[in-house]
Image 1: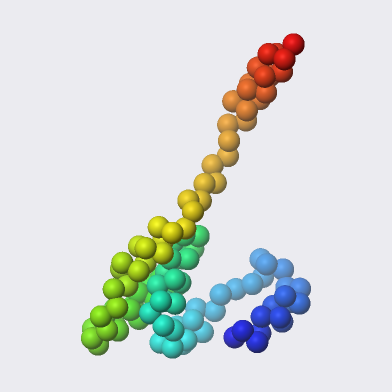
Image 2: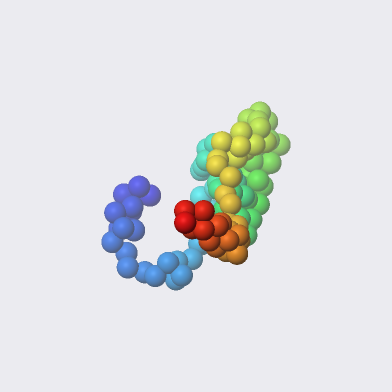
Length: 109
């Protein structure tokens, strides 16, 4: 996979045309480490994707748990999620910003 990275940089495909192949992800998930699966879940939650990746990864982690894997994935996911900065996409109130600027200008006179 890493060897393909330079090709991605040279790819001129528009971002809206890039699609995630869930079947390929499902096929590769069993080879991923517990940590990688958890980090994929964290990314899915953090960026608000459609949660299909999370479900695939959680199913794999649950399967591993039922086979005796004692990895504490719930705690690992919570810890990694808490380490990320809060995303805030709120648009500031333009009216308040303009009023503050007007007031500031009036104070300088």
